[in-house]
Image (cartoon, one colour):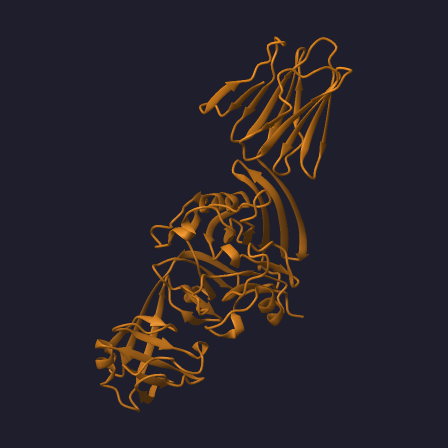
Length: 461
């Protein structure tokens, strides 16, 4: 037997001196090719079993050059086993790590060749409701198998709404995607943005026109509105405007812990108190008027905000008095709200831009645990005809679903029709729910509580 692995890797021979002919096994990144010699009168029968995946070659004559058992160092092919009986008949068993397609057979006068593809995608689709299609893929590529679930959502003239949800309807906290979907009456949902250990979304997040958190590092975000889908890098600018139109100070953040020399705006989504220490100064603003001034841990009014300053910005706030006019001006670039965007979710890195693979992990300051290696993934895409793709890839399950790199994920989104695409939180957070049923296999072995979700709401009756 000759075993050949890759055109440029290595070749070695295992020849049995008693036989002038030999079999050849060729391993490439995309296929396995078995070439068997065929003597005069020799016949072959090919069969297979799915679990465990085996391809069985039976012959009425011996197969030349095979050892009783040969373990193979390949991502797909696990072992070759050969048996020969007293009547001269023989059997060659190819055992695989996971399911592969039936082999393509080519038979010549003096040989039989089996070509087994390592790359395939078995896809099924069904309609959930008009405007929402669910797709399921069992696929394999040169790096291994994967299970992919995806939703194709068309909000145009369907009455379907896309919304964002916060766990427990507040900045801090966590909740299962299935629970958020059930609470909002969603037909389907996927996990959303990255989040801190305390549950805060990391990056820009807007619900129904209200900004919950500011962008970070100009990362990629998706904007949703009535008949509106946009994707771009998003930046933030905020200012405190006095009655005479002058700028008192620049805002540095929204609904997160205050750091040195920062001004942070706290809204009711943050909770009932700012949770700050007494080393700053906080100004409560309701309807554009200062209503209270405290040192820290101020109550957050249900109809207003708290402006919290530290260091140099504490000094700037100290010029204010109760009753002064003060406007809190928060702006995003691009100005999506002018285009009708009401929901914004940040993520990243970018995966696809204008139909081309476009990975922006370094530019968007992502750590290696996101940008490197293969992992469970969640992603969003926009098709050329304006539909939204929500995609999950299972991972960390050897020989079942190994997950994808960002480049592999980007190519998957392109394959599914995306011309724009971005990554979301993945790993153990990756979750897809339809009708309260978790369809993917979370890598933790169970659904993980997360910070936020993207939900699909059916038309209102």
